[in-house]
Length: 146
Image (cartoon, rainbow, N blue to C red; front, side, top):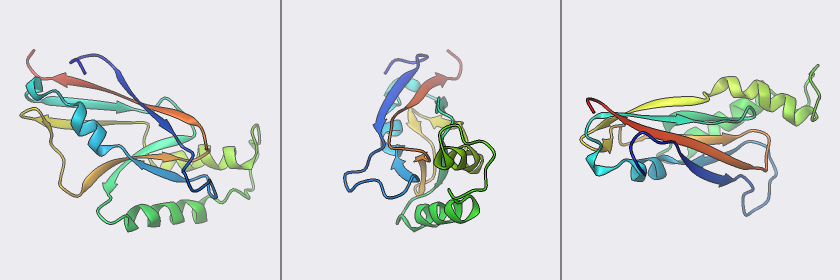
């Protein structure tokens, strides 16, 4: 990765065990940690999802139960059974557009001494809400004072 350019993480959101539910998580934390150049010094990493039926969350993923609880909450709060007015691609798509409000499309993360400076239990998670599909997560490092 070079500093100041947008890079991409490619994701295929179809899990190996099938796709029983449209909500599926990918932990992209380590990929983002690995993408910070050692000579980045201090700065920020911008992370962006260019899709409208998936989202990012910044939360704990230590044992997976937090992510499971978030998924269950989304399913209860916005069931795919609707009711919906927007049915362009069906109720799963309509639910996904609404479920996006529980996350964000972009994050700005701190970089300190050439490393992603987040807590040991914090992580960045990509949430598929309308899959399976090929998706991308884009990121760029912007150091301070260069």
